[in-house]
Length: 489
Image 1 (cartoon, rainbow, N blue to C red):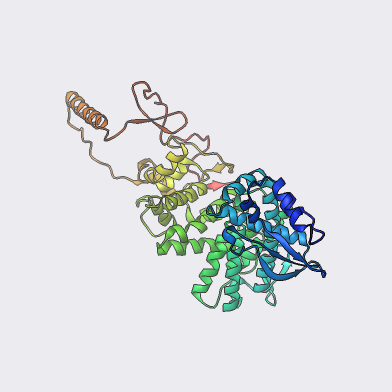
Image 2: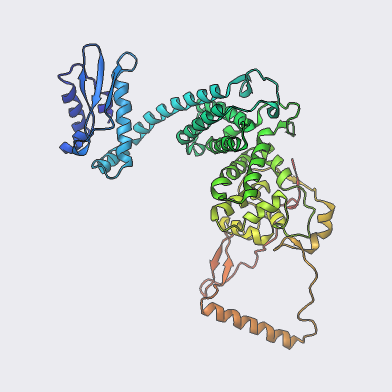
């Protein structure tokens, strides 16, 4: 592939021979494979070129370019490089093309080089589209990574004039393109130069998030695509959402401007209240808030103050009510697994991945799914770097704490003792009946006895693997500090 891309063509007479020779040396075996790679058909005396070729069966190739390209403005080598990379991608994406398997095998051997070439092209394209989005919105930059609408510097976001329909539609299309070329970059490590470019893009997206259009539907579409693209940014670069200075009318928390985070929270709650296609509409904002809270302390504390304020209501179940906490807890038992897991993950991160605190706010029944998946059913805290806690419980919670049922998360009325008045023989008889019923259910495979292992996960009980984990306690904290405290340092 390298020989094809960098092969030099000096005259019309030797161009085809050299390109075909390079292809043969790269490992080609058949004439059909040779025809798959495009060759230069003519170079005129004015330094212009035309690229043509054929696919299987002699059909015109997408590699063909009927326009005449100036060699001065775009060197021949760059034209060949771009076209060959496009052709390789097309072959790799289409199993019906005869060279699909061959190209995939060879590309695996040189995937690093091809990926680097594609990355370089994508990076430049990303910068170009970011600049186009900047120009479309008419932005200026009063400070580094701080945007403003040109002519409206210092104006609060809510007082800015709405974007026109043309501006909104063009911005949405640019956001879609940027989403596709930055897909999956949030999981990649980036250098300082790339991080600065992503932060620059993040500052523009922050402006999009705080802008509104001339219609509610178009405004929501703009915000939706903005949230989707924000989810593609590398996680450390999300600090750009907190960088602007606090101004009059801004949402301030711990001396930090929380306008963007507050807008994300309101956007998520709006989608949550609709309860329509939650997986497509809710998860992007839910995931974005979760990951941002995981790595940015100020974001986590602000979200916790909004979603999990100090617990006062201990008479109603965590899933009953109209607060944001109640709404998210209800999602923890949603039929869609992705929705259920993402909702639980957000609350778990806001609880700093502390199992006792998580159970306190959601109830053990709602929390069991996430805890089982992480091997935390026996309590403790998952891996993560969080600050220490100090005592800060509400008076209402302190008074009711001893009477709260940890399974439901609410105060349970005292129930009469069902064994009151029984003799010891009667109690033993009832216990044996219960054991026999469990044994019957187990033998008929209706239920399967399980026990907790030292890793916190459940394992099947057997005669060869008896339950020896009597030291496990479901609701005992492994932390030296008070697990139910609210304050963070």
